[in-house]
Length: 488
Ligand code: AMP
Ligand code: ZN
Image 1 (cartoon, rainbow, N blue to C red):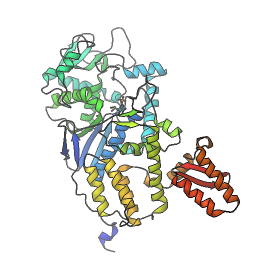
Image 2: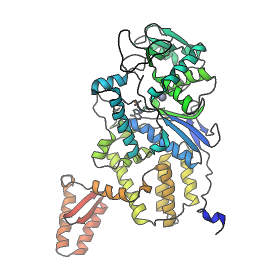
Image 3: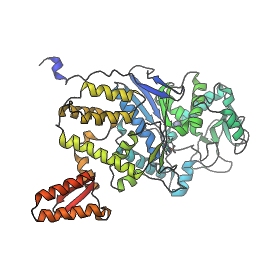
Image 4: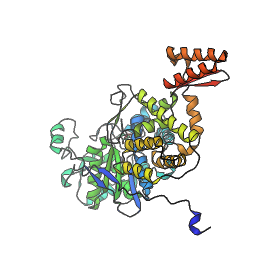
């Protein structure tokens, strides 16, 4: 065997150029990393004071798709997701309680107990959603206090800071040219709106705290000494300090939810570029929100759904991943249980085809690679990529072996669990069996009629009824305890 023979057949090179929507320019831009084949990516992470709901999990599925796409294109990705365990205040205007302190008050125990509990639930959700945690660095803000103090110091030396007595060290946004450029923030609107509820002593409404002093005579749960006094870092500071330390002074991609654009990311950008006098981030990318049944996810509305609720209802958590991928990451989505059922039905069909109908080996076809990557290259158009996958499966010109290869290829980005083996399919089969109380009467009548036909050994009629049920979207299986029915 020749040397080349050691390798499997080479995959065709991807032709399409990756293009991403950059919030900074509000345009689709061709992706070119700063330093060759390595991409430095930072995704703003969770504040671990409360369990993350399904909306909070959306940015990490988006980041995962983005990373897998970059890897498919041949890049190496250094990915960092921070864990915010200090400094994120209840209000965006540098006021109010620290969310972590609030969380500890509500839960009892120590800060560490809360942080460990919420982080563990978060990590377990990432695992359930097919996100490979081992390839991500998760720094905690409190482990980088020294770096944050050093950054405030650097900004102070350059003249960007001022002190508000008994409050903190603030960043003077007027000193930074183009403050608010990310997402073209209307600063005069901010001035108008800021007459109420602004920290006394701020020079400009958009100014933000870099370091907050602990209130006099009060011991906070988390506080550190600094050259300016005992206190804790402002929330925006941690991301920049950790990026500088872990990824470098300039990075390729920075992501988060759209809610981060106006305040958090403009503040990060200003303090970072003020410190380095260089561009901080090449591509800013933001995912849009998901609502539940048309309403914002909110504690006060009581409509919050967690991934564990989805699992408890018998869904494969990857059905939620599939559901998110059926819409573009920049569109506002709406979650409904019916929508999730449809996603699970599609995923089950995909597993059936892959595990039960197709051969177990085969190479991807160049045609499919071209259409699939073309869709992804256009700002991660996952709905189009998924549509291309279903089209390919219907195409009689594609051989079953190629279909196997194509699905595995697609799953490198979609991450729907095709590599994990058949286990998932059998799990889903048992999970989605309908309890008798949920079976509509007209379906139950047909099940009964088929049972009677079977007992009378009238197999033609039994098969006809079974097919009729299938056409109506119900699959019947026979078990030692009698027939069971599941919705497909
Ligand atoms: P938090 O822990 O509150 O900082 O939220 C974690 C991340 O989830 C942030 O990047 C938010 O932008 C994002 N996020 C919060 N709610 C939603 C939602 N309903 N849909 C999508 N993303 C959200
Ligand atoms: Zn951040």
